[in-house]
Length: 357
Image 1 (cartoon, rainbow, N blue to C red):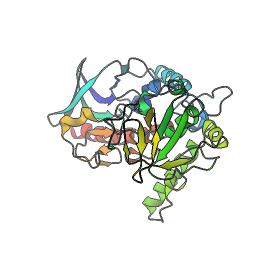
Image 2 (image 1 turned 120 degrees about the horizontal axis):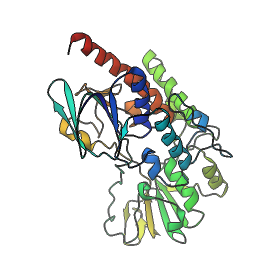
Image 3 (image 1 turned 45 degrees about the vertical axis):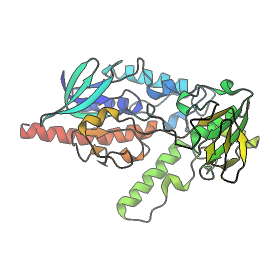
Image 4 (image 1 turned 135 degrees about the horizontal axis):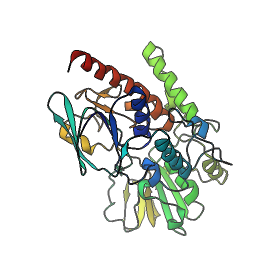
């Protein structure tokens, strides 16, 4: 099966790429491992909220409708939006298709091998995100601790921790949102590697994107670095986090140094009993399918110019975070990065066509 472009991943970044590929008139497919639309949003915990209002979280072409009565849309609302978006633009999504690997197929194509056959394309866009690659740091005693140690990826709600002693690890948005609701039903202790930095109450996802965009413009012009989003803080004050602050829950302790059979412990000999340690410690790019290309990585990141792989110019990476475009792991950021990515692909393929390649 031959086409101009294969997009791997049918979440928000893959759909945004599909929108612009359709507009550019290229022959393309989107291969998605999920059985239904919605990407990673389908697998997050039900109470998860966007960090910005619906009107500030669009994919290209069609703004996300507001969710009645809520400023910050729920996970279910986002899944519904992505499902309807895919259908609205009749994007050629094939699912479930599990990609085994991307291989070089001569000088003109890349071959994408899957459990449903092999697609050959002049360009591949990898848009698999991070949800399938949860990260849990290594701490002494993790293997002897007798309590539960779930990661954010398996969290489904606070009821599983009712009446328990729960240590929540992590200083980001997920940790703060999960702490906010688990603390309503359990005894919680919040630990972070550094003191958590809360953003001003009025900051949401749109502000974050605009700040990141201005920082990049300053960098390109040679102006003084403004610090970007990092200068604002790490945690958006969503309604549940604001409520937790009012209850006095948002008090973080220094990170423990090791675990025992039933506690977390620090180097000064102090301990805290725990029935569960909930690791809200983030994700890594899900790039296992790119291993056959033998691309070198730096701290797990494939070197890129924009979103194009430096080592394999027929490969583009979309939606993995700031290294593949400012705020590209957000809805609005994925759309803006997809636009520039498809523009670059169009120049590349058009040049090949002109040259008769």
